[in-house]
Amino acid sequence: MSYRSSWMTEELEAFRDQFRRFLAKDLAPRAETWRRQKLVDRAAWLALGEMGALLPSVSEAYGGLGASFAYEASVIEDVESIVPELSTGIVAHGAITASYLLKFGSEEQKRRWLPKMVTGEMIGAIGMTEPGTGSDLQSIRTTAIRRGKTYVINGQKTFISNGQAADLIVLAARTGEAGAKGISLIAVEATDCKGFRRGRNLDKIGMHASDTSELFFEDAVVPAENLLGTSEGQGFAQLMQQLPLERLAIAIAAVVSMERSIRLTVDYTRERKAFGKPLLEFQNTAFKLAERKTEAFIARVFLDWCVERMIAGDLDTVTASMAKWWCTDKQVETADECLQLHGGYGYMQEYAISRAFIDARIQKIYGGTNEIMKLLIARSL
Image (cartoon, rainbow, N blue to C red; front, side):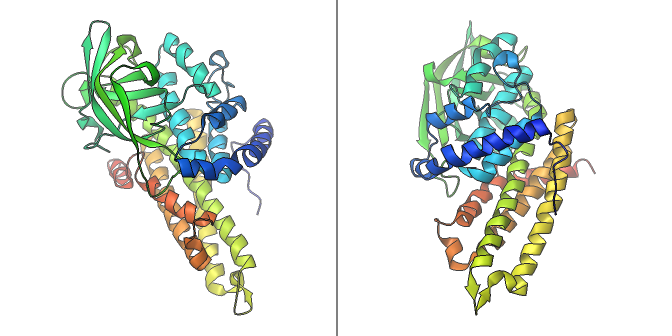
């Protein structure tokens, strides 16, 4: 069965052909090194930038390709399919961090930061989660107090993707009263920020190539001109506007991971024999994979519809929440079942299915837990 995503074009296919070859030849062989060091090296970021794969939808005025979200979606797909070790970092850099600059940054801010993010010279991160505050963003405690032409920031963030490598951090901080109305987004240029320091590169059970960090702000001084938006207190609304994009990006990675797990398992069960015949010829194996292929195809069609909506600019919060929770739930279920079909070899880290299994689990947590997704959907009933 041949299927082509509705948002695909000949121009995009040509870009993807070149990009896939680059990923397979230049970056995939380095993935094991990244997993060991828990960090993707700078050279990879610069190479991705040179390929036009970082922030392709950014206007040509800021160094991007001026393409539609279809290019962003295709980059996420191809990275997840060929070098999944890069997936989380690229999403955090582009679909998340850069999207706030594009949507809410001033012209001066965009010209200052976006061109270097496009080339990979500057790596982005979003600073939302705190040790005591995950999905409940209204309760963040990190403060940013205005003093003349600067903000003085105090607080701590944790579980920050790209935290070790980030040069620019879009930080959610409290500039005013308790609750949502007191939150603002402030861009922190980490390299030269006095009072800012990075904590541990956290030891996760999966996503080993993705650096995930604690960040500390102790009377950190940031220029007041780094505030995103026209005034303080807009941060929570800004976060709510952009979270559907983040959740769609997570869903894209989830669907591709499902498809990849199935592909790996079909190949393995064709070759692996038991009782004199390939595993794929056993009815249980064939039925399990038939079920998973069906669910992956349903997820793919729904995902493509969501991508269409994002390209058109009308993907709503409820639909994005549906895509995030359902696709990531199915991703985890698929990875688990495909690992089972690998038998004992599936538990060995040298097999790609084992890494797909351990990497999948975080998808149900970050970007808003799947329980929160269901709550958002339920409010629409």
